[in-house]
Length: 215
Image 1 (spheres, rainbow, N blue to C red):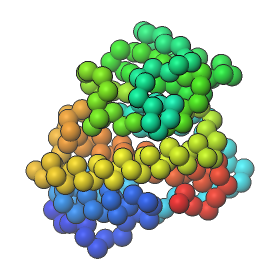
Image 2: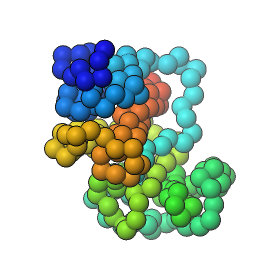
Image 3: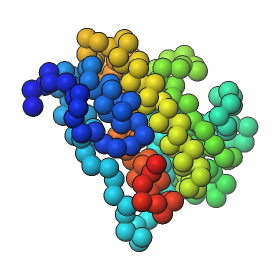
Image 4: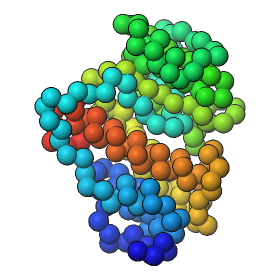
């Protein structure tokens, strides 16, 4: 297929955000971006239900540019019950959370090597990429630890909404195509990460909820 060929009418991955991101946004720009990653993700079949023996992942990333929140209406940028450590790697941050039974997940900022351990529920998350909560690059990542079925579904719903918002943003502001800058508003890698993360969240919902689909 020619890189400029639009995706109108093409088969898209049948998830909640397919028409919003994998189809609607693709019709205006992703097709002309020439991104094999996006094309592969958008046209890949929906995740199949895994074998019952398949174990759910202990830590589930909510993707690039996400910050943890105690609830959908929570605006606090640090947890009420948590521990903040600087100068550590993401792997070390994850290991520290793994070793604490009271840790529900963590938020990591790569530019500061800042590890924010959450010793309370992470009931929601915010996509900081377009809705900046603090100065600097939106190089955050919220990771939840062993979320329940209901918790994961709540995060999936929030992620679906963010993916839909992204599709409209791309259509309105990125008509000339993507940029290769990681934190630019029209970043190719960020858009691909949103799509890949949403797909992985679907897989995790299927595993944790013992369901046939993530709908």
